[in-house]
Amino acid sequence: MKNKIPKGTIAKNRERWAYLFISVPVLFYILVRFIPTIYAFYLSFTDWDIISASANWIGFSNYKRLFSDKLFYKTLSNTFYYVIYGLPLSLLFGFILAYNIEKIKIGSGLFKTVYFMPYITSMVAVAWVWRWLFQPAPIGIFNNILISMGLPMQEFLNSVEQSKGCILAATIWSGVGFQMIIFMAGMKGISKQYYEAAKIDGASSFNELRYITLPLLRNSFIFLLITGTIRFLRIFTQVVNMTRNSAGGPLNSSKPLVLYIYDNAFRSFDMGYASALTVILFLIILLITLIQMRVTRDER
Amino acid sequence: MKDKNVINKIRYIILFIFGLIMLFPFAWMLSTSMKQGREVFNLSLLVNNPSLKNYARLFSSSYFPRWFVNSFIAGTIVTLSVLFFDSLMGYTFAKHNFKGKKLIFILVLSTMMIPTEMLVIPWYLISSKVGWVDTYWGIVFPGLMTGFGTFLMRQFFDTLPNDLFDAGRIDGMNEFKIWAQIGMPLVKAALSALAIFSFVGNWNAFLWPLIISSETRMYTLPVGLALFNGEFATEWEMIMTGASVATIPVLIIYIIFQRQIIEGIALTGVKG
Image 1: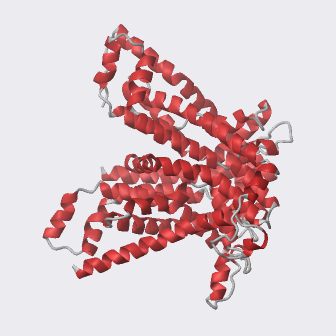
Image 2 (image 1 turned 30 degrees about the vertical axis):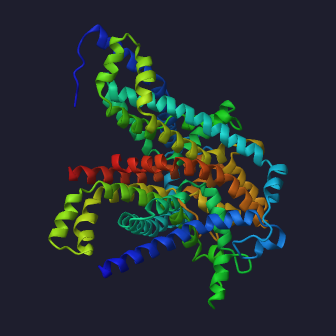
Image 3 (image 1 turned 180 degrees about the vertical axis):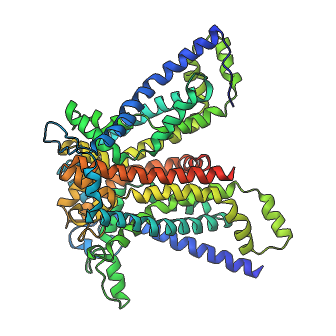
């Protein structure tokens, strides 16, 4: 892996160019990524509210406050709800689509194009279209369908029980194309010889799926588990746009952690406390990433 | 053989149903944006008298044209910067040797793990101190370079043989020219994928533009759409028109470049 740098003026000259090339980016990453990260950690130990001239060091007070903050637990559990229900469902749908598209002969390109469309569409636009679909009866189409089937109207976004599910539906819809593409890329990487061998042995297509396709898609699964977890942990835009007054309601029933961070930072200007919340989010994401690195290393 | 036919039919039925689910919200949005008055609540995809009146109204009586331009400017600046710096840095990591290379590369990659939500508070505090609130610079500065793009470009430059670059050195080209004139044309496919991701990502970005713009005229399209919709909460045909305006440019880009987009996305999974 390591190429020894030969000592010589040409090599020295090239090294100088390399430092020149990376100088601006390195400065950027220090100023716009690393220092703000450290600064966020620092702020989490202060009581800064923007209006006051200076921030006072208050030690772990913000973190202590977290432990007794009911709304923090509420938003954290909402966030985990999104991850726990959203992730398996979107993996399942993504897999079903990829698996079936790979098997058909005509029209696979067209299906792929259609399924991926929502992923590149603005989440704000997606959220408002779905918000409309979920409206009460004369306006909302889902309720009209229910009524025409003789079923009772549902509260959907106005219900404490159903709001999270509605937001999740829009989120899964918008992301399933991504899972599909990653699965398809993984399936392309599986050598045809395995399937030919299975055919000779007379394996059923179910056994083919179980003993060849699924095990060999391990890497795709790991990648999607990680990116998917992070995606669901960071749910924000859809909740802001689907709930009344962007409040994550009704009664905070759909409010995710990131919206709670936003509320604290930019609605109550409690920057210190908001920073402590972002540190928690950071630690969760860090933990997940470390698990991923561990899992992929074990395999090698 | 008969079994196979049945299974094949089931596959098409599944794919077709999913296709309808994916297309319906788009169709609904576009069809409503062309409806007027009471027809809006007529639950049919077909429009009796389709017209573009809502679009005309949206563009003449709101900040939508301005927001559209704002999004376009911000997306273009970020994309150009990302193309330049990410590819230069990716190239340097792939084709140059220098002390500290490995460490710097790991540090750049590690920035992908830092959640934006954590950075927006410090970014905002700095921006409000130095007067970047409600400026284009304020909207774009956090995204001028990306760990993802650097990684992507490094992977591509890595596959090119060193001889190509050495030939340039023998011809007496300087290192910058070697990157610009030999390296860059060879990674056009990757650059176009990166450009599309960058532009579309910025076009759709919400959290940071929401925070950094306080004046209506400096909103980007998603921010404007969100706040405009809050005010027009009962005029669903206007909301759907706004959503269409935010969606249509991206759909056009997508339809033209879908191969690059889908291949680029697949690549992130394979390499990631």
